[in-house]
Length: 287
Length: 140
Image (cartoon, rainbow over the protein chains, first blue to last red):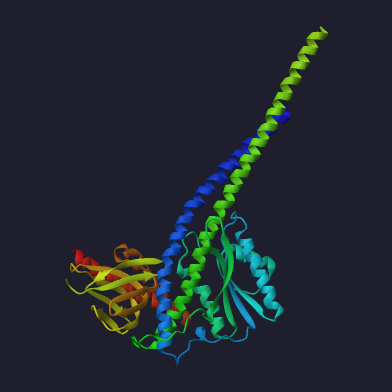
């Protein structure tokens, strides 16, 4: 009966693991919904800002902020790498890092050196192992990231850009496609792309207080911060979705394992009973 | 019906207020401004302080913003708030605490950088206190 007892303990331990993964799955599902709400809530701010910025850029063509300047040849580029703080979320972080490594190799092949800013402890841990010039980092943002926590690290990168130490800054994060799919993405942050230069239908301009430059400078920094914030929030939604899926498959696998072990246990128990009966019968026959 | 202007107060972390107003007051960089419907296009930085929105019933709603941008078009006012939370929710104790800490930091400042930071903190704490006092007066 020794084998049967071992199997029984094993089943019990897998059952308790299954309970944990099941609970984590449900927690991740509810956190994912909240993270998606936050994603939606951050959109109007940056959209509105982009509107104002593109208007200002058109209204004051003689002033080009360095963030909107034409691209210069890339000698050094910066990456803001957004990752999760916790593990157990499937291949989310490792997929992103793999994508990043491919990108860095391509850049190095043409003589461009990368520098990094990490958000989340997984990215920090990765660069500790992988090596790399990490200029700034922030960890433990929690489920509700705040823009205040991001201002510092983003400023480090923007300052480096303005001092011409970096020629471009990218954000590496996961894009939330749907619950089942998260796609690692590397997007260019500065110089700002995607600002269309269509002619204004009729000319009008703001009254500026104190003047256009000050307003534009303040807007641009905030706009970039909000883009990074969005990437962080989106990555948070990805983390929860990915964790939910990973925990679901872990629970399913535990279920399969339990039913297989149950079968083995039943067989072992039956074998023990059969053996006992045959021993009794042969004992009785001997008497 | 009175003329109204649409007001949106948004921060990076979410929308705070959206609705019609007959008048909007805000603390712009060069002084307090009042925005009536059909105001000309205007853009300014905001100082820490409260944004008041007067609706058609003549009621005023207060929103504390710790800085941001104010954008005005004839039919829309947009406040791009840095961090805006409902003025009622402001914790007076926290503001006092921040003020005390800022003052302590001012007293024993060592570097230029810390001095500037402390001064900014002090300005914000004072603005928060003022917003709370105004609310108190209205209620009491």
